[in-house]
Image (cartoon, rainbow, N blue to C red):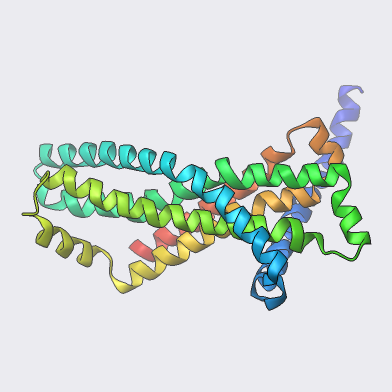
Length: 267
């Protein structure tokens, strides 16, 4: 194809790419709505469905708890030390603890937990769904009157949400303990002051924003890989690179949630 033909076809190619992206976003929104309805439906928690859900919760949460706890403790210790030393060098020691709690617990921990779950749990779970599509299992279940969303997608999505919330809660606890020892050492002398600072930081409005942010982070990392696995053409999966587009959309949503939470906390 000559340069002139490429130039003439450029608007059409751009329009096609925009249309594909808009369709991908719409399918992600649609899948989110369907899965939320299924999660609230009592029929999704019958005996067999409960067993599938429990299995997915176990395989997506338990194997990564130890590794993530160690990573969270190391990350918190390093960042807490950097912030404390920097604050002391500028004569701002009185603000160091407040800053560490805000940076670690409110901003970094939920995002770190969500990304960790995405890399270790939900994206591999999306690959499993793609493999089920390639083998024809989803189409076979549909012909037999079995809803593939209930059997293959809902348990993995709910398990991803559970894993992200569990890791965020666990890492918050680890961060609070690590920050305390980084500031006061192995003594209980600073416990009263530490809890007072913690209470001053976590106002009702900030706590609400923190809970909502963690919840939406968990939904994003659980649903976006599934939307890519279900709706991206199999030919693109075989060529490779389909997961990259889903990850880009997931990261864009996480960034948008983080920006909105920052506006809610500090403006």
